[in-house]
Length: 144
View (cartoon, rainbow, N blue to C red):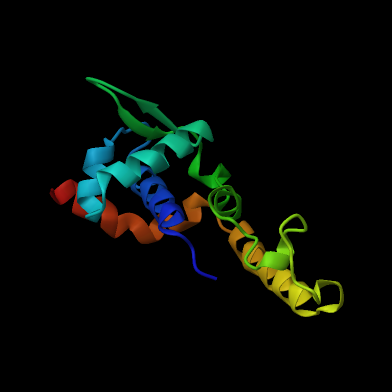
C-alpha cells in the first residue's frame, strides 16, 4: 500500500502541530519551509484538515494553524480513510467494475482483507502515539 503525498502532508502537518506546546499556532509557510515542501500543496491539505475540524485555521495577522483536537483523540486510521481512496483495484467499486471474472475472483477478497488488516494496524495508533518520536522535530523547531 502506498499513501499519496496528500496524506503524507496531512500527517506532517499534524505531527508538526502536535509536537508544539498546546495551543501554539504555525503558518502554512512555516510548515512548508520546515519540511521543504510546496506551500501551495500544503495549503490544500490544511484546508481539508480544517474542513474535517482537525485543525483551526485563521487567516491574516495573528492567524495561523493549530490543532483543534487532543492528539490522543485523533486516530491515524480515520485520517487515512479521509485522505485516501482505498478502492485499490477496480473491482472494489461495483459501479465502475468491468472485470469479467469479478464474481468468481478470490483476489478481491484477498485485497479487501489486506486493506482491512492495514487499517486495523493504523486504527491502533493516534497522533499522540507518533509524538514521542517527534521530539527531535520539536528540538529542531526550537533551534530555528
